[in-house]
Length: 193
Image (cartoon, rainbow, N blue to C red; front, side, top):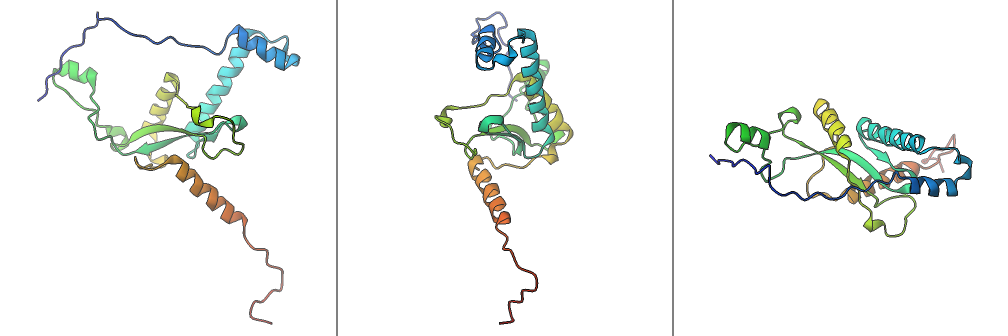
């Protein structure tokens, strides 16, 4: 049995600074670009953005294949993955019992939820797309986790060694093959010359 030590709750902490995009400067730039929204206030602007983000989250959770972001920014979807090889320690229970305990994910048959973002196969390539990344907010991760526990079998299973771009290439090629069905005229008989 591995014993676990209690953390030093009074110890020094490092916290990264949080940057918000929903500021008055962003609103001023938005109004400059779209002058028809000059009467828009910051609170309304924030409400619109937050409502849109909530709808994106609901779309990702409801659709098995995820969603495509607007302006060709990429795709986001949720998937099931096999459990990690390293131990995922449950610190709350470990401190409660004094012995290291591990999460077992009994709710999802020992599978893990992962949220994937890719911009590999976007319709309109954009400059420096390899620099873009996505990090889900805490609220999104919590909602997604609860939805995953309820219906974990709904989501696709992704191998830990699989590249997501190859998965999207496969779907794109299958869609292309479906659109290439030959047009056969009425009364055509291939055996009649």
